[in-house]
Length: 442
Image (tube, rainbow, N blue to C red):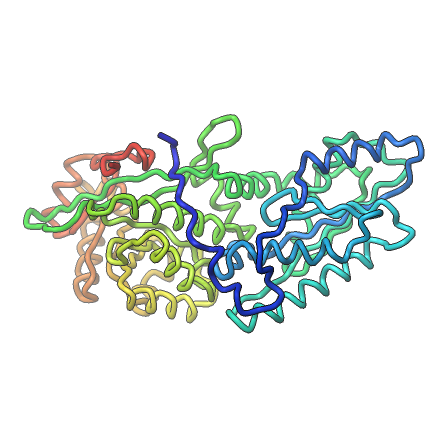
């Protein structure tokens, strides 16, 4: 059995693409991929009549949002429109990632990279105008321009790396970002900070993220309810090594990739929950502050609920203030709307940051998860006992249940049960295991 679920594809091709003339009525052929790009570059570099040439990359910004709102065809249509305006005798279009394309411009005498960039951006604007009639999303693309001169002696592998780097450097500029790269330059210093970013994006695109699960145990003897677990994400590199969240999530958050990770996790976790029909496992999933403040969050979650036939009451989203929430009002609105639809919310790492009390006061919540720094030695540390007792009292006042994190031994679990804490999570309760091998897998 695979280490991560392989969800059935939701019916995205039938969503939202019937009411605009820009969206193709039929699935269009995919542009050639990286292998074909390598062949063309090798041919050009080896040509006896070699001329300077250029490569333009365009990467669709907020690709997961567009995919969730409109399905695959909006992306196919954008690529088709770019392809249709190219002169096939001098330009070739390739797809080197799910959201990224490259145009090799063989004859720079007819059209230079700047003109080509402007043409692509005009097409993006046309698609944006059509899409905004159907959903409140923004369509934009980041442009990379790579110049390969006669003095460029890069091998094909290095040139392909430069193509990919141009796309990532453009994305770093923000929406509508543009990056110009010299094909003969040494990009090591520029690309080094982005290597983890590239690795994370590739893991998302090639399903190399892995879902783990850790059980959550009720501490009250009279508890009645379904078994509980928290979903945790890991990253598996091409060599098979597993990287922990602390090694890649801070980088993902710094570069705006956590919403992409969150959507991957939500989709795959919901697919797993949907396959457990009748098992009734209550599943907690972490959401980043960036995801909470996205305007398309509610629609995406609803699409996944519908696609995998998941009961909303079986899902709890965990949020933390340690990374901060941009756009607090929109985040609060999203949480309120998802709770209205039956999902639950937990405030994670409570007590670890200065904003904890504000979040407790202003956000509609169901659970309070006490940060592990107050739990590890609570059975022996009187100060932590006072603080845990105060947190329990606050949770009762707000009508919330409490979950203690980092419960590492049974003595701590026993103390927390006597202190009135509702649930415990930690190595004494159960270690994280691959979701497909966990205690609740069918």
